[in-house]
Amino acid sequence: MNYQNYKTEDFVLNEGFRQWVLQGKNEAVWIRFLEDYPEKKEEIQQARQIVLGVALDVEVLPADEVDHLRQRIFQKIASPEPKTMPAFRFKWYKVAASLTAILLVSLFAWWYSFSQLTTYATGYGEIKKVRLPDGSTAVVNANSQISWKEGTADREVILKGEAYFEIKKKENRQKFIVHTDDIQIEVLGTSFNVKSRRKETQVVLTSGKVALHHISSGEKALMQPGSMVTVSNDSTPFVYQQVNTQLYTSWTDNRVLINNTTLEEIAGIIEDTYGYDVEIVGETLKKRRFTATTSIPLKELDMLLKLIEITFEVDVTRKDNQIIILPRLNKQSLNR
Amino acid sequence: MPGIQAVMDEQQASDLHLWIALRNGDKAALDLLYSKYIASLYNFGKKICYDHDQVKDCIQDLFVELWQQQKNISLPSNSRLYLFKSLRYKILLHTKRQTRYSYLPYIKAEIMIPSFEQNLIESQLSDSQKKALKQALEKLSARQREALVLRFYEGMSCEEVASVMNVKPQSVYNLIHQSILILKNNINTSLILAEYLIVIYIYCQIFL
Image (cartoon, chains in turn blue, orange):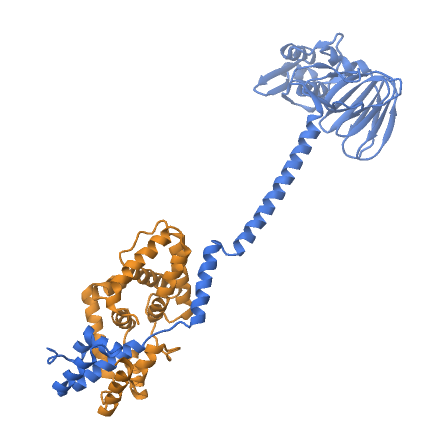
């Protein structure tokens, strides 16, 4: 025993002392020590209280809470994500599935509607003769497009741009229908020119009969040969004119007929056929009309422009995508 | 009763077996580890964090992560130390998130459900002594209490306590020494001999 010099704190820190206090180990040894060193009694009492006090300072989790916490842990382990997560995921799964379904259906619809359409399109300066499924023909002018549903008995085409139709008459009197942005043209057997450009459709009938139906206003008209109807895609009424149909169909032979035609109209033809921006300087020049004795070939733009220069006595300059038509200075002064 | 050093080596050995089983995906091993350490971990957790639910949440996280990371967890040489360190880190991280990092001053209201041993201990102290002890314990800082519970309740060596508290062993010595001096100066020292003899008598009744 060498505890004679021990102070309270030394007893507390002594493992043997703590074991005696807490577990009653070596009881006899410590009792004898107290008998031998009664002056240590107070220190030992203090140390005992401290040891017991520290041991008393215990936080106990009640048994039911121990089990509850155990359940919580094992529940979390069993389902790695809390219940809200699968529900959340399921929602996303649903959304994804419906989106995919919508996408697939619309994709199929798109494919179906377009796969059934046969389309012919022409570039600038290109004229194409198309044989339609019913035996009719369409001459498609430059920068235009004609399409129809394949595999149906319908005689219907959709036209963007300009085309000249020669429609065969059917024995069962089945109608042939041309759809443009503005009108429906119903025909039995005939030849006619349709020009649907710049928010305007122009129909020129060379032979037979056609019925027009304005899509937005509902206006109907029956055309006679040699007439022209101009329709805009707003609800303005049809404009009727008697015309020399040759002027409007000459393009099918790659020629342009100039007969009392304004320079502005010719510029429009160049714009539609070749894709240039044509600018005419001067209002009087725009409205100047001209009649050529022979038709002018469309194929050669250079030659056409040269002819315009000569016949209208103007200066024509071509730059990039633009054609500028200027009055010739000396002539202008002469005109005045 | 925790603090029985003699059983410690045996415990370390069985812990190692539990840990190996855990790494092999044995849920029973996790269950055993939980049963074995829940009391100690909770007691320790409550010493550094006042919030009962927060301590429980951190213990839950500790065991869930232990399971989720079972494959990556290396076998700890001392599983008890590992668990205490992990829990301490979690609680401090949690507290940091909520408030500034600080030990919350804490006054223990009463012992909830005393076990047999605690009944025994309680029986050795008079009510006035218990009151005095509680008042003395309240004078300790949270860090001092933390050191005391690890050292005396868990029976850890000062080096182990230092490892858990992430301080130098000398700091642990100092903390514990200061604590004992504070307790010593604050407890009622007038324990009468008669009282002492009764205590001895109870011991004899129980242990001899």
